[in-house]
Length: 271
Image (cartoon, rainbow, N blue to C red):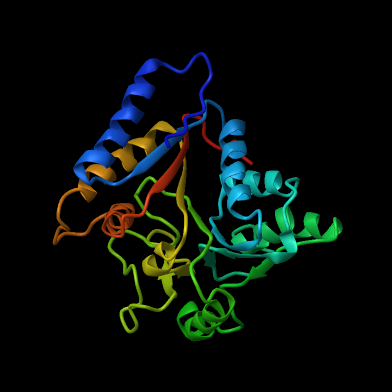
């Protein structure tokens, strides 16, 4: 069932557009994307937290993104009553930096979610994508073994952010989506194309090995990127480089996996 949160100012065009998405998914075999529209940033965070809480009410495993919006999401989740001691979390990707760095997703999770819940007496287990090795490539085998041990089956949920270039996790345009040496490996080393910052990312295959998949997107520009990716994913794969989000949507379509899209015209406030 399509769920759309809206207020009185939301124009009826949105209802028609979202209904068209569902009709297309039902009758043409297109990607079953369920758009959930929040009119404000606070509502976006709240609705995404509700979706996560519903899927972790009995504990389980989750992969969450980093960034400004997920930081606010973690702060909200810290006040949600869940059996946190039975929850295992992993970042969808991580920079190869110390947790104390402002660039660290895992550091953000520890500060905004794990630490407050620890004070309350029950915190989730954070499974790290890092090792003491000098580079992500050197640490990848150890991280892969750790992921296989801590998450032997499907995630209960995967929540992804998306960049305006269509990247998800640290899977960037023109780069590998899975480890070339082991296509079924759960993680792979990555490099940011502009900053050359080394990272570890969950692979596309591992991101799709989940019971529930969602995208968290803010702003009109990213909505346009996602709409274009949805159209591109309905066509056969191109020999030219495609956006990672297009590859994600096409793979989800092949697996008949519904995707929740949490979107708001509002973007995360500047820090």
